[in-house]
Every structure is written in structure tokens, then in C-alpha cells.
Image (cartoon, rainbow, N blue to C red):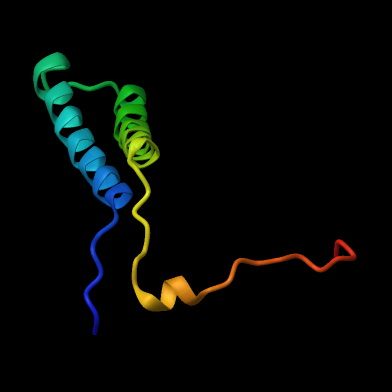
Length: 83
């Protein structure tokens, strides 16, 4: 099995998710003192990780493949009739 490096976008999204978990914990402990309203808890627990993961993946640079097989692939060219 060949080893492939992890793309920067994946690393950034993973860090964003981990950071979101820490933020959710900090909000629960220090802002709401353990009594988080259900609506806020749901919004923060679901929305914050998704938002931070998307932002991290979007902001990171694309990692170009350099292996020989990837370089052999030709780009898709649509047929001339447009179908």
C-alpha cells in the first residue's frame, strides 16, 4: 500500500472540528455554568463544528497530487454535440 500525504484541507477541517469541541466545552463550563438552554446547546453543538470545519477546509490551499498515476489522467472533454 502506498503512503499518501494527508491533504492540507483535511488537516484544517479536522483542526476546526477539534477546536469547535473545545469551544463548546468552554461555553458550557464558563459562559452557561453547566446550564445550557437546549436551543443554544443544539445550535452550538451542531452549527459551530460544521462552520469551523467548512471555514478551515475552504481557507486551506489545495494539495496537488504528484504521483505518476494522477498525472496520467486526462481531463474530461465533453462531446462536440453538447450532450
